[in-house]
Length: 171
Image 1: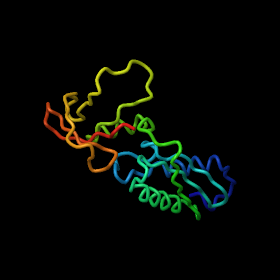
Image 2: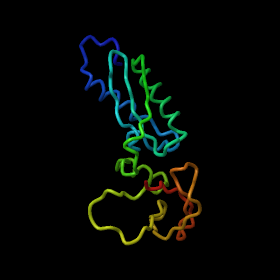
Image 3: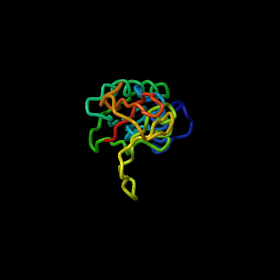
């Protein structure tokens, strides 16, 4: 708990603690990953005793989950002694699928969602744009719908094992 401490806490240590708490909030649409792993948590700044500002960047402009994310962050930080929590949507720089952490990609794949292919990776450019089925690993997949349960995912099917799966679209 942040309040009631007898020794002073520097804002940087407090900000790190609060970032950890806010970052551990699960994404409301993809609860297998946290906001930190998804890369939408941009900044946590303490502006005074009991006051904190959190910056979030949605995966898509107008993402309906941003309200739930903000509400969940406010609740968690208030439970840990913050009286004034301001969650602000920041659109610049825009979120990219490259912002998803390696751990987030691993968790998406383990839950049956094909993670996006990284854009900013140095090295050879792949000759194909094939996706691996998260169930059997085959690259023989087909697009069923450009949109799935959320705007950030597409619905695909593996032609090898015939299982449908979500693919987190690259941005």
